Image 1: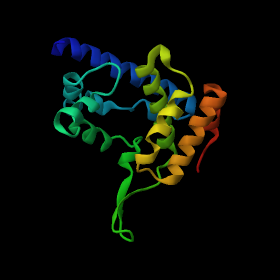
Image 2: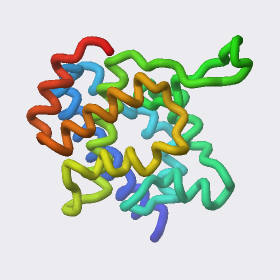
Image 3: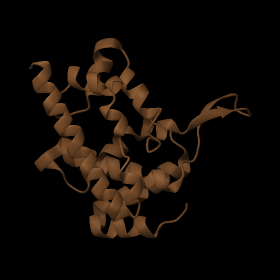
Length: 178
């Protein structure tokens, strides 16, 4: 595929994803925050890599990692978007190493919305409400996320799998802290 074709496809994919996240954020009670979701994906640092490694069924970051061993676009993205647990790490002077810190609840809500939207976009017609939980569980053993943050995200993903979106977004709207 040519760069122009990939550019158009990538733009459509990230825009469709972003609009789905915005909709979810409104359902979750953080609509204003959702309006700013993933704007960095339109920056040259991320968009060019998105075109170069566009697949349509998975993140271009995976292709960049396969090619050069890491993803410059992902490093740029996670450092600017607080809904990614990878953003929330800091040096722990007691442990003398970088460790995950507890995320503010509004960013955990956005992370939930992001994961569900990404599952819908990349899975298409194969999407089910249990898929985001299955995906979360597959990565659990090698994820570095604060336990409290992981637990509440897993709780919401479980409610989604068992009771559906309506109940889950009601739960998110009513959750003020954890």
